[in-house]
Length: 594
Ligand SMILES: Cc1cc2nc3c(=O)[nH]c(=O)nc-3n(C[C@H](O)[C@H](O)[C@H](O)COP(=O)(O)OP(=O)(O)OC[C@H]3O[C@@H](n4cnc5c(N)ncnc54)[C@H](O)[C@@H]3O)c2cc1C
Ligand SMILES: Cc1cc2nc3c(=O)[nH]c(=O)nc-3n(C[C@H](O)[C@H](O)[C@H](O)COP(=O)(O)O)c2cc1C
Image (cartoon, rainbow, N blue to C red; front, top):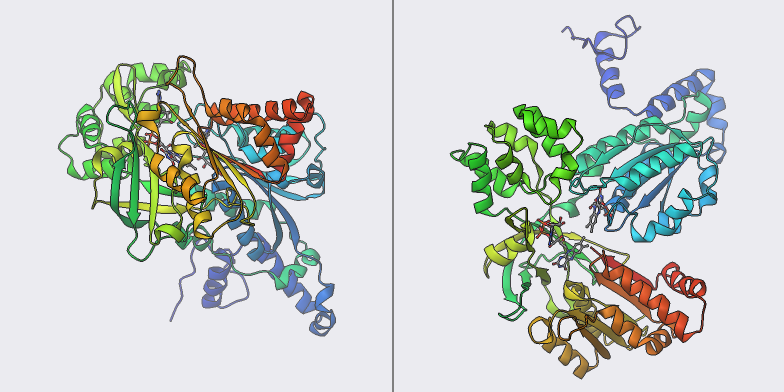
């Protein structure tokens, strides 16, 4: 039987092999990595040099696998997870990887790393993740080490909805180069649907960072080289969403409140994710059917049922980024929209506007695929789990604040929060996925005291903490700072805190209701008022937790604590700042902010 040798074959037809051997060899080589091919060539050279001699070399004498330093800057775990996946793939590919959190990175290590990968997320408004902030500042500062001789690659994670898209990854990429390191492959900036892009960048990074194929060096990698399956490394089964039934759905604000904060209990029918207090669930929402109808109508596609379904459940039809505008211009050629892009005004114009504003401002007919393709996949939203499995068994509870506001004369609704607030009732099913957070855990020793600062929905994980500590009979004291607008209408879980005080699982609560008096009072003010006890608890070994709004509240609480140390311990502002920074380094000041 004759065998067809593909034209793209790596092995030339002139090779001294039969045609079917060429096909077989080609099949193996096509899926091989640079390290694997280099190993093979070194190995075959060794075989020809004399098998007996090769066999006589003791295993321990083999040169070590190529080191690879993988550093991640992560807040909510995505970069951390990708760094772990890259570490596994690198090991299989013949590297000796070391995966390090930016928070634990000693900058002095960098010049010694021949191969460096950085995976970095951007937070706040273009800021590094909180844990990474100190090392990031040092790397950007004058004292950063020179990095000649280091080959590097940067993978940046972000969200196109933000003006400073992937700002931290971009800055790190430039900084490493400025310090003398050599960029081995181009940076890639990834949006919230980063899985596929990250898998393919990982594959390219391992090829680009692989050592040059000298038979000597690569023969040593022999014992480590295993085929790498990038599809599998990307497809973690714990990332598969699961369905749960809504068994409780209650607005915890009074009917006279101007807020809606929904307590949702999910029942997993025997298959609850193995969550710990401090973890979140990612919720897969669907879009408001009325908004879907408006978008379809504006694009002249109201009759397309398949598209209606896709836009409802799968596509992000709210976020308007410059990329969306550029795709719209490419699809429609609309001259005014093109002018917006060409004049560099797209970002400014998109502020506070959504896709529907674009379609309304620049009317154009779109084909179904065009409308679909200018949108991005609908990302899930994270919600802190507000329960402990030890108390609620197979359930998980969430606390979700409905996001509603108005911009450019249009009423807007947060996709996921109003999906839950408006379109979900008891008996409905929700699709969720566990998002673990090993950086926001209760102290290992239940005898340790804890202080929890959680205004608004920031209180959610602390309900889980209190339930957990009740269930294990923790000896440590627990102190909660809660805040919201008004005592009568917005005191979330008020009766539960009362019960917890009665049974001792909560030792103390201080509350700040900002609108109950003429002057605004917030949790950071209560913290400062109670500074003597706060400092006393912390000096006694307590852990300090902050959850909720990451823009103002988290920063103000930290500043308040610095002031508290300065006042109580009679420290200079610098010394007080150092005291709080030490708590952070000791992982006794933990934040989960959004
Ligand atoms: C780790 C983590 C835990 C979280 N835990 C909780 C939790 O326990 N409870 C909770 O409620 N949320 C929590 N969140 C926030 C949550 O994930 C969502 O971001 C939030 O519910 C809004 O999502 P949405 O889909 O309703 O709104 P989206 O459709 O995503 O809209 C939100 C966007 O609308 C814009 N916007 C909002 N308000 C205004 C305004 N007044 N003016 C102009 N623009 C505005 C902003 O661009 C904002 O980013 C958490 C987030 C993270 C990362
Ligand atoms: C409160 C908040 C602020 C964010 N700010 C930015 C930003 O300024 N720029 C950006 O590109 N992405 C921003 N993001 C998106 C994150 O970078 C993105 O979710 C990333 O995947 C998180 O990675 P991590 O889990 O490793 O922290 C923000 C996300 C949140 C929740």
